[in-house]
Image (cartoon, rainbow, N blue to C red; front, side):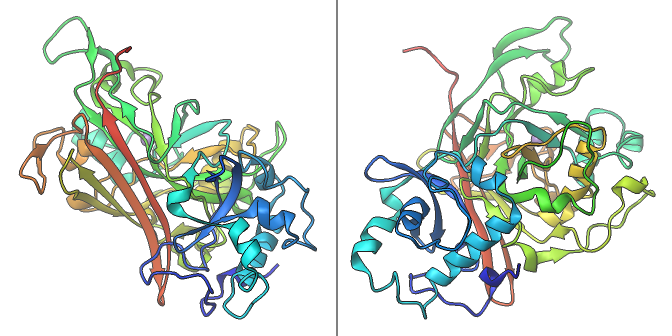
Length: 427
Ligand code: MN
């Protein structure tokens, strides 16, 4: 099926600002609560949210094999499980409905009243019920920086890193959409020089700049997904802030890896940008340093040129950009990650989420965490309001944004914006 929704020449009859992340070529999917307190699946063009449940009821998806209630749900899981052919047909149809040449909905005032919402009339929800969450560690710059700081600059990468897309199983219960604040966690840490641990608020709260992909039902128990087929099972991507408590992490991570330092919160942007929409932005990945085993070898371009940015906004002050990175820096791509994840027969389900790992670039201003940007706190960052940050302070808001741009078409992710609240206390 052709990706007619990606036609760069198409214009919409809905207003779209020049620098909008959501031109008619984007057509992301999300879940929102409407002004009438109804939850629905929707999309967005410019600053207009579109109720796909209502559009379907009004007959606009006629001819596409969809169940009646596919969009009248509080998650995208069932729609995602319908597979790539259906996602494409629906995106293509949405592009047609909102094409400036098409007057069917444009001239129907009654229908428009039911289907269209301003952004201030809706509340974005978590787009999928995430069954399983896996986080990779696929940026060579990040792994090298962390290895240099905590182990040995001469052997920063562990021996397995150039052979395996290293990852761990995370926790999905604490994944929240943009706008939901999170509390500074408490936990065990080992103060410098101390022999015994103490309990208290984490002093080193950090963000991790990541992207995450959402999968469809991919395989049966025991069945590996070949690397060349892997992208067929990727519905789309979101921005991910994988909140981390560095002092808790340092004490707890030996020998089984991240635990409470990572699972207190992970924040995602609410619109899933489909892999189809990102098609024009494919680029070559980094050169492989060591030969990779056959099941990880791929052909073609499987990396994506996505500009990423992180800001910190102190309470009542302007935001300061602290990092600019790019998704294309990832050493291991999504297809390799999914092939590796399933090579032992581990099943992947509709709505599973796979984090890329912190996306650090080659230069110090492109690092994807405060740990690296301030080099363990040794080089604090100056904010616009004159204050300094080594890590994230209470009541700071961390904002991540991402977009692709080529030949005048910009496809963006919007943002994931999260305020860090002080330690939880029962009222
Ligand atoms: Mn992470």
